[in-house]
Figure 1 (cartoon, rainbow, N blue to C red):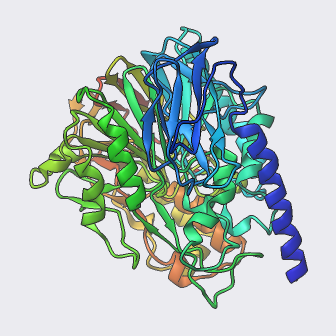
Figure 2: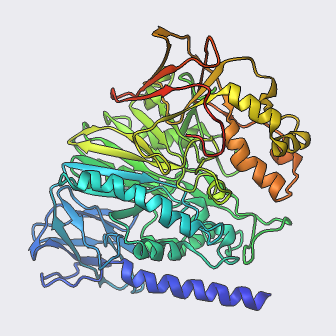
Figure 3: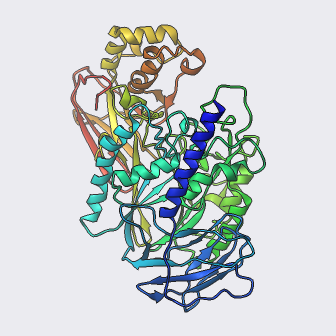
Length: 581
């Protein structure tokens, strides 16, 4: 067994080396450059053979600017083993062939005392208007037909959104907030973060791809120790580049951070093949990143510039029921206790900017937090945390079980689209199954009640898990509306025969998710785990009305924070099933 693991690790490292050769900038410039005293990394940045001045270059610790000849001189201890540029506004980094990862970094090859040269080439592009496809938690592991589902279901929907803007001449980019792979299965199913990069090329992914580190993108074969976090990220770093970096698109400054500290504490529990520990992690931004970020942001002198930070785990959430109110942090310290200080360290660097957006994943749930709602914490009032649901939904299970693609908050799996015009940023959610034009699902609870009363599998499920929501006795003529990307700026109205009905916002277990994920996972696969399944996982973005009869038609209107409206004429009775839209 040890020999098998050894060969698997060797194969993975070889694959990472192959990808690193294609990933980094290997450009050689004709511009003159010579290392000055103290510089261990130097080189040029150019466009069409002409030097570019004022481009930021960094090793993750120091930040310097290119001079008028396009030359940079970087005194570096080479601790991270890479050098990268901050792509300036109006430019893009090069890509190679069908590869979609921009070549904004280079791998260091000489020892710390030896000066080495690395050059970068950019191309001009008008990108004051641009669009970001924000995706996260893809969790490709080479099982449950996840690669097939990714190709058949996700990619056509993504291309649809990309083409919507490309046809108008607007450049489109992707920010991925990590967990593209699934560390516990790297050696079981031989699919790593490097294989995910290959998959992007295979499907001819249609935009440049900026990646952030997720906890499941770490190599779990590295045992617990002082340098586990750095070593476990090595393959990801060689595949997608630095784990923290920045770039400019138009009038927006983007930063990608790694807020996962991979610990991998020892455990006696059964883990995947080749995994050395528990895959544990803390959620924080390291001191070295914060020091680098302070230097990076110091170069953004116009404080009206929107700052967009992509990272895996969200930073803030509302305390109760996802409604406006007190803001608490999701960050943890090394012992996994909630740590307000860790979140404040990051926010304090951003307090002088007029507008800050975090784009995050990890939870597989939609929750947009407008931090201005918490007047007790003015330091974060300029911040919105967009916690976005996942591409994989519930780890690809609901699609594999023959249903819609649903995530653990019962929302459709999907991604967020951010159209940007100058300094104005908007956003909307796009689901894999229904696209951007549908933003809610209405349930006729009379039909749900009938299903729960008559379906044999549901009766078996509830006999094992009596604490789950049982809709068999729900009162007459209730209607539940799941507005999956709801945030406090949205409104929900329902009319029956022209009369507006009172709408109540109240969490509820989503019956469609229960029969699409929990029932097949526990009953079909005989995973009769009371601790795991005998509890309600209530969906916070549920709205409720009571109709006057079982056959009346309801007019449902949902309006988002930008005035976009989404409507449904709900003819009742309305069927309930795994496939109900």
